[in-house]
Amino acid sequence: MHIRSIVAPLLKWFAGNARDLPWRWTRDPYAIWVSEIMLQQTQVKTVIPYWQRWMKQLPDIASLATADEDTVIKLWEGLGYYSRARNLQKGAKRIRDEFGGRFPRDLAGVLALPGVGRYTGGAICSIAFNQPEPVVDGNVARVLTRLLGIEESPKAKPVADRLWSVAAELVKHAPTLQKARQRNASALNQAVMELGALICTPRNPLCGGCPLKGRCIARKQNKVDAIPALAKRAAATKRRFIGFIIAWRGEVYVQRRPSGEVNAGFWEFPNWQADDPAMQPADLAKASLALGQAALEPLCTINHSITRYRNRLEMFVIAPSRKPRLAQLKGQWLPEAKLAELPLTAAHRKAATRFLNTANGREGVVRTGRG
Image 1: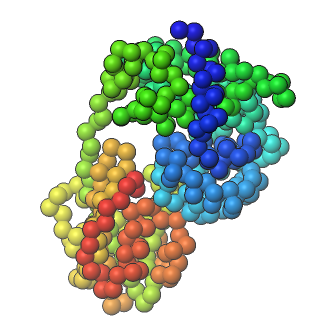
Image 2 (image 1 turned 60 degrees about the vertical axis):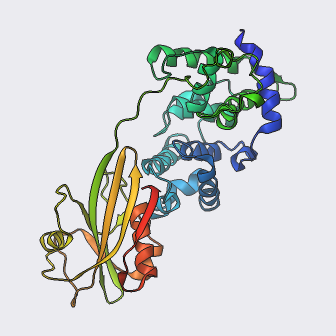
Image 3 (image 1 turned 45 degrees about the horizontal axis):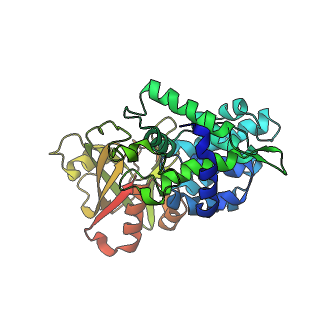
């Protein structure tokens, strides 16, 4: 099979089936950059409202470069993998300081931005500038391994190299746009990604509606369910955390996660990982908060997942009779009403909402997705 033979049917299918996504209405490289970073390890339906809010509040490189950190991470709150937000702002500052505020138009310049790898760089250059740069993400890898009948893992270096080579050959043969006199790399790359997202799905692919079904080796050999070969996921690790909302006369105590740590810059309530399964919350509060015999009221238990970790956060409310100093902690007292404005980690946002909405800290269980 000549790989160039699939270009025409791919583009025809994409023209009639592409989803109406907000970032597809622009060629602004900044807007596309933001969308591609948000889409890293995150579903499209989740990203859409985040992208729209971000673009409304931070519509260009200059506004992102000068925004305060709380604004940036508040806009990202709940999206997960928060280093992406910090890398976006670092990249905006670099563009401002090193590129005169203009988004780089070549792959090398785009790859120099923090958090931009080979796939993201190729996606930005092809979509924003119509440059024939290849892209290989999970969707593309699945389409190509099935199409070519590659039974080895797409993460194996020889296979990955072959997939990038095939993707480069594909985008090189995207037909020339008559008016623009340049290759339609943008539509071609998006077409392969869209096919993987909508038709060539990981499970129960809709092969009957695939424009490449007559050329697909996996389908011909009845191996669609076996391709691509994926490594077994690592076993999930369970972790237990115990946290405290310390409330005194309409104020609560919060602390900010330091730079260099997971979720750096986000706010949270004092909490500790309880490695000892027999650890009692009252004993932890006494040892870590130095609050003596202050009563603990159960608030909620939050189960949330972060990559391979399955976390259980047990939250308690402490309402001491007098304002504690908490000198051993690096945090601050804030009015309860300010909690809505702070960028909190997802699990602690759930706890804050329960605290504000539940009288007397009645017990409950909240289950969330990514924390």
